[in-house]
Structure formats: C-alpha cells, structure tokens
View 1: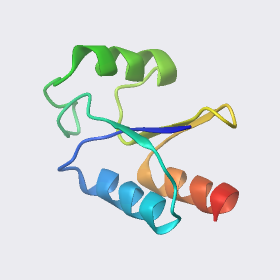
View 2: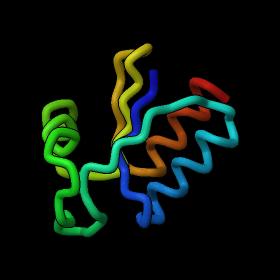
View 3: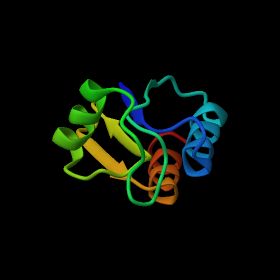
Length: 87
C-alpha cells in the first residue's frame, strides 16, 4: 500500500499525484497540514503525528510504500522512486 502525506494546494504534491495517477497506482492520501516552507497550519493532528512518527520530519510530500518498506520525501525523489519501482 502506498500512502501519500501531502497538501492539496502544494504544487510539489500535485506533481506526485500526477505521477502516481499516470502509472495507474492506487494510493491513500493524507492531508496533515497546509503547505508552507516553515510548515503550514496543522489540519489533522492524527495524520500530522503519523507523518512525524513515520518519517521524523515535518515535510510534504512524503510517500510511504508499505509493500517495500520504504519512505521518501520530496517530489523529485518520490517520482523517481515510483517510476523506477512501478513504471
């Protein structure tokens, strides 16, 4: 299962969603906070805490691939990862 921690209005998150969709991948979306370089307002405390527990950083987009036991930050790194493993 793929889980994407992101923000709807974040252009980097949009790039990741587009790549996942282009590859025909199913994924679960979490919107823990608003976008912002310094961290935006938290929208969902539970998913925000999950983001911090799983990755250790307050950074979006963040992808967790439970099937492969991997996680990645940043749109370019995430896109490269899914293209290499699922493309």
